[in-house]
Length: 319
Length: 319
Image (tube, rainbow over all chains, first blue to last red; front, side, top):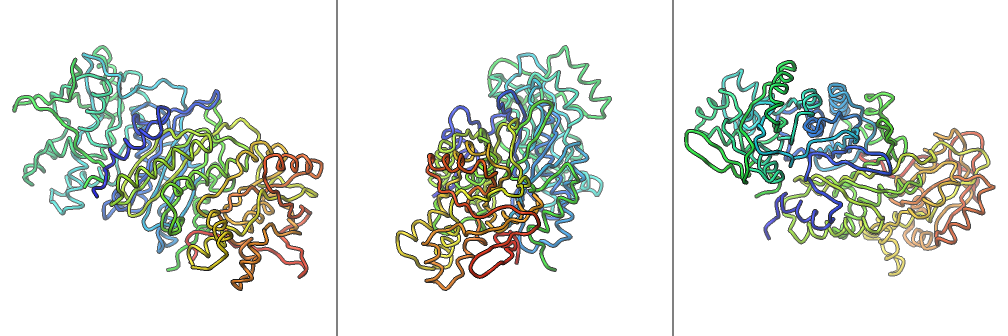
């Protein structure tokens, strides 16, 4: 019997749990208990599927936090607390536990949050679940708030992490500096927390891009009930060069990757200069990739004409 | 190199994360973000270590919630929301996903809570992490609040789940009704949520017993800085009989098991009758097992004289 993929599994859970229960329709959940409102996000990192060979334990610990931090960043919410649940395989030495614990401590400091508790277990492989918490009283942009005429922007270039995976997993080659840059995109991704916290007031819609750019744009287009017209592909020359050298389509690297941890957002044209200035001050390279229009789908307009960008990118359990 | 066990791992994390970060010193955490206070508990269930053969997927889903519900029960906090993060192995069919989802839905209903979101992943084995949320404005008993002269009580008998594991894992035998009872203690444990919610006002200290009775009593004794004198072993004749038939020490089954999901609590003698009446009305069988005294350690006083009950029970990763 065929195994269902992640999309199908999510659908099953959504159907079972009814309206109050939402499986992954937004980057974070807002929970209200009496008068207390808080933001929560849970994310699980699994060694066999999420950790490429060569990644250090401290980097793994950091990345497990980065996934949640990036979700908070795109909604402009400061992460304050985190809990961690761990499955640790037999054979982990005290040195390895120390590396893991140090990784959590340092990255908690890096992102200005407190790890307040956790649960440790034994398992066949390393699994790290992080639940992250923040203030739920702030107004947040949704994935579905894009308006006709808004500009579509990403907080950084895409394709580095896909190229990095090709290098780390499949042994592809690149020049040493480029290879280092690509590997870093995998091992030490930088969520745009500071930028997100400041710039969020100008976002009409936003989403974390870690499921891949094509999926992100399609989710935002569908939930906004708008057409997303992409006129410029957000990447750097080193990705295009790497693709050419390895006879790959660079657009696949850019659109169908994942784990980029950039913010994809839309802004009203009147706010564009404010967002540009903010990014410049914070040393964030913005990519203005297109605009929102009436209609549906994500379309790419370039020298080859007009193409629809379908969902590609990373879906767990697809065979 | 020897692998550190769970206790050592927890100690490492505690040392790393400093004062604000507490790894497992209490059954639940209270988080305060601005004026919002809420209770959170994270618990991870791992197939290879937490799931005995023969357990159905719906029962596994339910048990992953039970662990958190039981922690809430012992603090008298109503669980309101839960998030779920899953690692699902390749080869899971749609039917299996349905069983899992139905298990979550039914048990969420059973415990009156809403599952509000989650994260699905692929992994080598089934891993379910549950984070549960409740109101943080209610006063809660701590593990360390026992006073000299208080009565020590458990919300049910112990030993059934240890005996159940012997039957399920090691092929031990028992009469059919007894075997069924023991197996049920493993497959469909009943946390004492309704009782906990009502009786909590009388608890001077409390703790969920799922790490095993000996560990629970030792934690409460240490954190309360009191001696816990046990004068009566909380179990039923079927456990004693099972132990005799299989040439085991029944006290090992009672004290050194785990996964009982009973509340261990202390009450001032003036409140004893109120607690008894409440339990009677709610059909909960209380076991008054001893009293709190000045000093330290957990001691058992019975026909054989006086013995110190050390920590035994379940610690992950101990070899």
